[in-house]
View 1 (cartoon, rainbow, N blue to C red):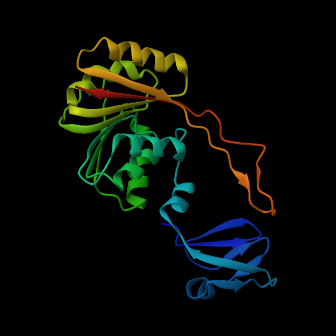
View 2 (view 1 turned 90 degrees about the vertical axis):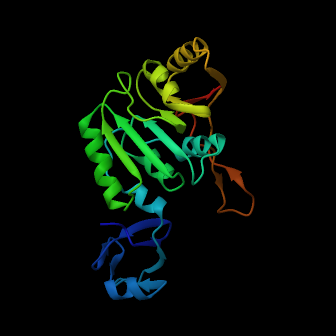
Length: 239
């Protein structure tokens, strides 16, 4: 069941689906959650109430493998020009975070994963989010990719260079490949493999760094902790 409302008290966020909400700050009644924007608990603590978003639900979705960071997902979507007409090939379904972000934008997603347990997790998440434009395939993409004419392909597997040839053949001319790799060694191997393919051009490799700022004071200050390295994104284009 999807999360329907978010209740906020003293910077803490509480997720609500149905029934009364029980917290350490007291109980908030279901009828008040449904009908009000501000409600008090039985301990007289005030909660702000807002409608739950896609991102709120994503925070609480079932996970298996580590999910991709929103900062990296944003780079993939914007740099490839993904839009409502895009047909996207995904190699490595993971828990489905990237899958569902892309499915909200693209026309169709075909997602391959070699592990059946990953596919089951993504299938459940897609059902919970009521997403229907994704086809899941449990198969080794380095052996075969059945479909073709893709506009964009994303690769998030341990040895991305092993699927590069098949991905390239499944892509339209002018299409983009994005390889997501935690280590520079992986990225380097992908670049070497791509440069040996006459149909591919390596554009660049990037990493994104995210730093939040403290907005609770009159003078803004950067927070000490920040989201540093998560992965290297290598962008490749088919001639």
